[in-house]
View (cartoon, rainbow, N blue to C red):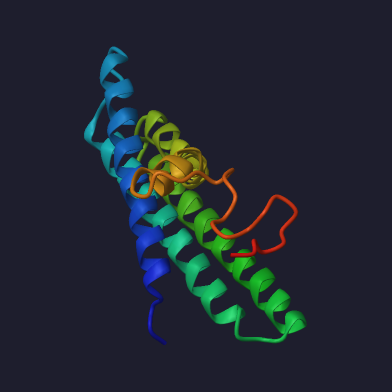
Length: 158
């Protein structure tokens, strides 16, 4: 199956958002005395990559589900959601077990938690800026009526 260009584009947007938020999180850990270590960076990057993969797999599922009957699509989406959640939980559990087993500092586990919200935050900010991106090139806004239509939706007579 080919990856739809929209899925690629939106996954890149999520990856860019994750990169920015990872940098911010690292800056916060640097500001905390004794808060930053290499483990914080590595665990944060691992979870950020897992969450970008999570979004990409969601995009692939939606891409294939639109071709199915509604009942089949609903089943596929639910199964995909369960598997993606299981993937995230498995990575968190494995990383936490490693940290505890090796008696590393627990701040490494704390660094893995914020990336769980990166996708939501990126989509929220992207949605807030969508109207600016759409209107920047053509000067129109979402609230303006379409050319050739009156307020009641009937076509204008020429």
